[in-house]
Length: 200
Image (spheres, one colour):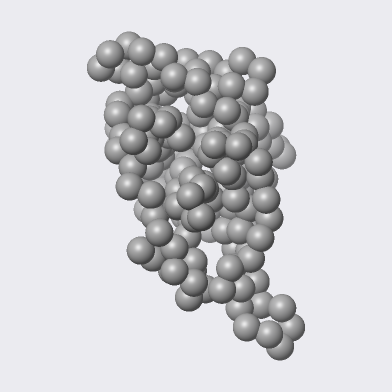
């Protein structure tokens, strides 16, 4: 069991016999009222998505999941295709249940498939991914890591804030947990697999 305040995007819990995946989780304080958890939830079995609020101290029963190594192959229409790296069996996962993960997925990326019993319910991403910058403002002369930064669009469509000197075509390391590169600093290329930036 856990409390609603500890729920994060990607977590899965059981409520009233339903298997629910958290797509978004935010704290909200309505005026003089008590803080609430604003949640965007996905019903794994029905495919429906709802916006709701929970009290921070509300008890939540987390689902007991197991994972298997897999590889992301491609997305067709509204379905993402993955392959079990041990059995080579392919699994289909609705993209609606991968709302946050899709922004980091590249073809042939290694992930972990999540199972609840025999049900395939989602994937676990690596902690960081190397993504190429496809669009951003021109570099500023004298720009540094400590400057305010600028938005940049990655090859997956993800938009993150990057240092002012980053240019389109460069590769950066993005945290899949934080969804940002704000906590980055310049390191020698051999320290981060040829990418220009790595998270602290």
